Image (spheres, one colour):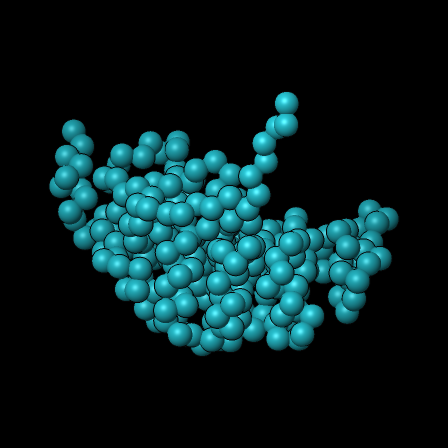
Length: 246
C-alpha cells in the first residue's frame, strides 16, 4: 500500500523545498547580464508575478529569450519600459511599439528567428544537442554567416542550441516536486524552455498535493523545476478583444 499523500508531501525527498515563500525569494540570485527565457505567447501564459519581480530586483543588461516581448505595455513590455533589456531573441515583433522603438533606436539588439527554428534550438539545448541542420531560412538573411551543407540534395543551415541561465514559466497546476500541468495554449514554449535553462523558476496558479496530478496529465516532470512559487491571482489581460458584428 502506498503512503498517505500527506506523509509523502511533507518529506524533504519529495521536493517540497522547491516551494518558495515569495516571488522575490524565488528570483534570488538573478544577476545583471543574465540570459532569461520567458514562456508565453503574446500576453497568453505570461508569468506575470515573476516578470514584475525581475523589475523590482533592479537587474540590468538582460538577454530576453521569448517568442515576443509583450505588447501594449504589458507582459514583458514592462522590462522594455524599465530599460533592463539589452538583447531580445524572439520570433515576432508585431505591434509591440516598445520593442519597435527600442530596436529602431539601437537601444536593444533584436535577433528574429523563424519560430520553428527558435523552439527547436531550445529543445536541442535541453536534449544536450549542440547544433543541428535545418532547411528553414536557406537563401534568406537567416542564413547569413552560417554554415550551409547539402543533405539529400537540399541545402541546410547550421543552427546552434539556445541555452539560458534562467527560465521563468507559469503553470496552471503544480505539486511540491514541481510536476506541472499547463492550461491549454498557455503551455506553448514553457516545457522546452524549462529543459534548456540552468535554473527554472515556476509560478503556479494552483498548488496541489504530491500525487494529485495523474501521471498522464503531467506536462513537465518536476526534475526540470528548481523553484516554485504559488501565485493564485493574475490579471490575464487580452491583447485585442474580438467580437462578431452579427
